[in-house]
Image: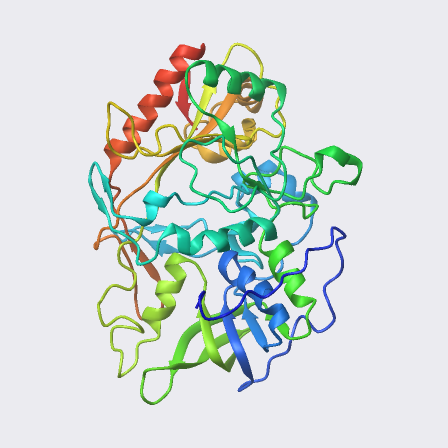
Length: 466
């Protein structure tokens, strides 16, 4: 598709937060037809909708949730991290049939409403066969070079700040980042200097925010401490709502239907073409048809939709003659860690450093280990949200005191595709996520590299899991 269609020019967004266009919310009648129907308004669906806005095609986006409200609770750590105000009420089941609440966010913009605004490109090696300690990550049918022009356009669309040439694993890029790197605050700059003295290559984290540090009086982003894991109250985070759906809806050919819970895809009589989408909105069944149907509702829910769309021609679910739909679910091996220092950390916007020196391995471990980056600055309320049982008896002031001296890291290693790590559904559509972690040795090695590094730097024995 990338080679058969020209790029559609995407106009730059206005920095003014304007009301939604008239008619952006349709009352879709049963049987309505569109050129393209997109299921999901997140990173995939919201981006595609904006790309198609200038095409003239009649586009409908279906979103299971609603608009995330702008309200004081957006930046309330207790509401967000302890009460789970913006987490879905879904119940899924694990491999032991134990119910759990997934960290899903059903809003216009999807999970990008809550993400940390990190915009990393995969490396060239990630698209090729890559040997890990626990097995092989198979090659993609396409290569990095096929995706590079689209990475560039995504960085432009999502206002990504960064600096080329700092990361030793950086793949070829056709142009600089569209915006300058975000400046480190003094405590983080000291950490950068210390890391470089230790022989590492820390680099500015590629970050999607609407920030103008040269003209802060006119910058929408304020570099606050409520970015990573929070929805942005002032719409300054580059999410698929603010920079995807809202600009798309300014075109009169793009429409959005919220609270639209899609239950199945409907094929033609031959079973070879999906022609319609069956959904329920506020208790009312609706069917809409489209020349092209795009499924973009997350890894688990996209698999669920295909499996729930089984019919006589496709008894195992759509596109599932291979029995691969829902299999090889991958999740990463990730941990949030806190390094405690004697000196206080007064940083506000902390998530500006990344380390990839061990991304593909080192001289002592010739396998990929992964990525280390900062998280948003933690506080006692956030810590209690992450570990409620472990911190139950600790008063809030003591957690805040710990957080005042914390440097907060996120370490992430790859897991590998495994056929038994899979999404399945029952007849009612409830998801079971059968998942067993793998490639744990690489994750432990990366953790060991970080602890050894911090031992050198003055933080000996002060790294704890958050």
